[in-house]
Length: 114
Length: 107
Image (cartoon, rainbow over all chains, first blue to last red; front, side, top):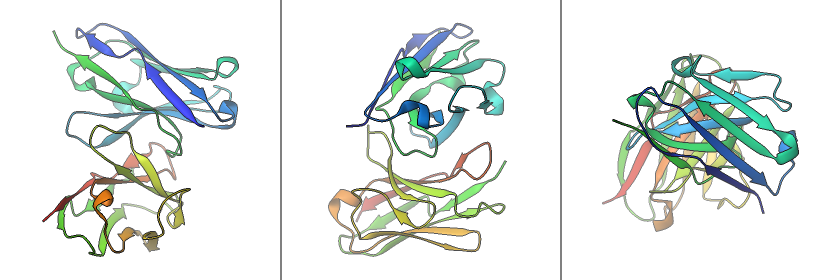
């Protein structure tokens, strides 16, 4: 059974950092591009970042470039999102997903507030 | 960035209805459009991939089609479990972009 399980969300003050993790199982992790997608409360889905099979290529939406870093560890079947200089507009549920959304995790909530 | 203009944003429906949701792409995205269903408090579920292909385990009353830059998701004979939010996604080029979503509500 395919599983993606995110962790690391929580309440954080503006300007601080947070690191999200996603543990994958049930499929060959290294065969997939992976991505983070977020959804602000009552809003639509928004792609955040993607990473290639071996981590050699990364892609970000403009609003997080220079602040967020996506990475992966294929030996651990894990995906990460380092989020620095957090802003209130980053408040959302963050989903770990295979690119194009074949598989999704349940999400982890990030709240940026003082 | 490619814009995916999704319509309608909400729809009042009855059980047994045929429902069609459309996304219009601002430029050519080929077949690289997926459709997702999302229920409250849950993560999205892929329903259609590459515009017209039914994802594993998805009932056959769901279908996807393409006409030029318009992509449609059709639900035939709507059942109560189909009442949810639906989202389209283009992944032809970066950044991948979602439509604004369609909320189905029962009359």
